[in-house]
Length: 269
Image 1 (cartoon, rainbow, N blue to C red):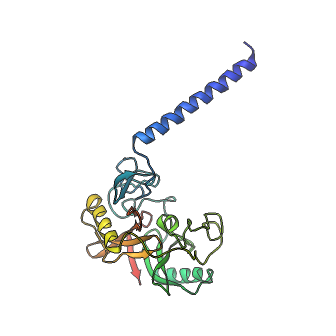
Image 2: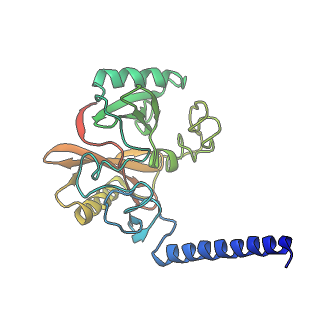
Image 3: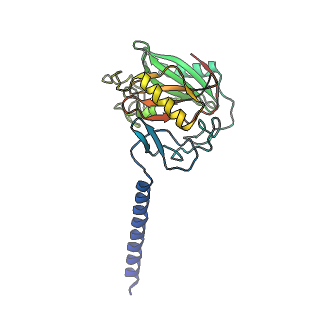
């Protein structure tokens, strides 16, 4: 047989094997329940295939148990419920102070050239500082920001802030690479988003508490669900102190646990 034919058959054979492997992967993915739910992110470390909690029942999603952002154990703190690192492990740097975080966020907000945006809350965690920004005119949450403790760089929080935020998020018409996106410039917000959501604050709190009761008994929600355009963010409490936070979609009731903060240190509001 000519050498050229041997090479041709070898290439074809390789492609067939690759297709079979790919098809098997798809089959196994569906068999283990991968779907379209986008909820809690890899926090449990139990080796399951992507748990997505919602009002419609338990499904499976890319960001769930043992998923893309997989956690390390079943406790709060570093490597636990709030320690599943979405973008790599944190460096050994001291956490920011409240004043340092506030200064960084205030400077960042000036670049938006939007006088309606106001810093409402700062929470200092082991891995980053968290800031909640609201609209002065409505009191509705505009965006959630993170501050890197090593560089004081401010950037949009991942998860619901990008994917569910209908006015200021990635899906509000600006895109990750476009104006106002993760890699783009800044924006003042969509003018078409509505503050009305089909899931009420009371229902969001009840859904969040059921999630905690099912997955992390002993942890409670805060009294209030902070509304954003398309979702709520709720503090998680333990022994009367904040222990983390989660978000509830304002239309589907899906729960998304914020996993990148680490242990809680202090807060200002």
